[in-house]
Length: 260
Image 1 (cartoon, rainbow, N blue to C red):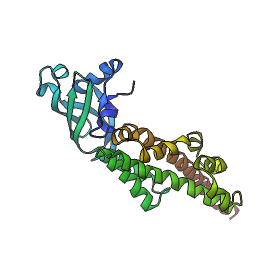
Image 2 (cartoon, rainbow, N blue to C red):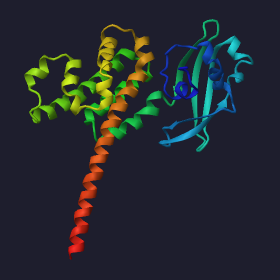
Image 3 (tube, rainbow, N blue to C red):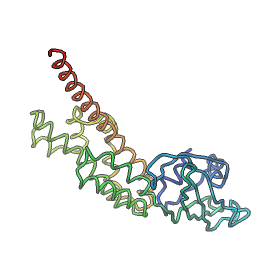
Image 4 (cartoon, helix red, strand yellow):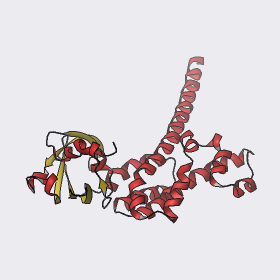
């Protein structure tokens, strides 16, 4: 089952038509359940919190799921009381749900999370990552793929610079290789998830050259999460390295203190 309440409210871009499958129906109707609670990020308070429906669809139609049409949903942060608004279109005869507007935007929910990668990405690349999220949040699928691909390529270039410096690979061998071959050549310098999922690059390239906006939007979140997992792996490695260096420093200080 792909549809979840959390994914719909916090991840799904606007104008991305979702077909609700039969096995997803019970989860789908929870978007109107005032007793249903779910987890999500509050971008105004910059914290994970618990949310609940605060204005139901029955405010517009007594039998909205059968009648369909335009409606507004509201959810409230149970911890702070902040209320977020969503405008939707439900077409029951086709089982199609479309989010046609929201405040705050999908980008607002995710851009703050991207800031944690500041130690890994240059200011320019960080802006490109947030731009990808912002474009997808506003229904621009192909453009969002362009920026995700740039982030992917920057990770490969960074690994190559290190490998070249170590004398492992020459610039000539690197430049003439296809991207998948480059990843194989640099496997020791790249996060495991990237190496195991190198097809991400060909999917991003396909999106730029052949896929339409809606198809790119439908798969944007999967690829964004893939990039984040790669960055998370690099971030964990960096934090471990920093922790080791700090521990070494303190142990040296302790040794000096004991000597005295």
